[in-house]
Length: 119
Image (cartoon, rainbow, N blue to C red):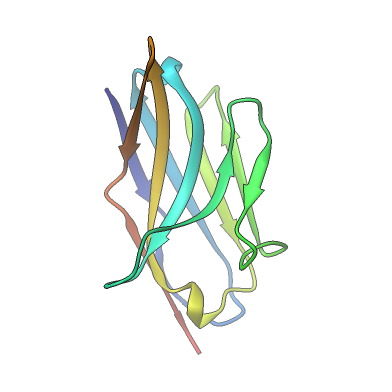
C-alpha cells in the first residue's frame, strides 16, 4: 500500500505561481513512475506531468515551458512547480504513483488539491 498526500493548492491570480507537493508513505520502494493529473467537473482526468522510474520526464503540451515536475526519492516527495498560471489551469490536481508488486502494477491516488486561477 502507498499513501499519497497533496498540498500547496489554493487561489492565485493569472500569471502567478504555485508549488504543489505530494508526500508518499508506505511501500514507497515499489513505486516506479509518479505523475500529476488534473480534473474539472464533467471532464476526464488529464495527465499534466510525469517522471518515470528512470527519471525521464513527460509533460502535456498545454503546460510545457510553464510547469516543472521533480521527484526526491530520499524524501519520498513529488513536486509540481507551476509558473505563468492561466485560468484554464484551474482544476483539482491529483498525485499518482504506479507501484509494481511482482507482476502487478497498482495505481495509487492522493485526495487532490484545488488550484483556482483567476483572470
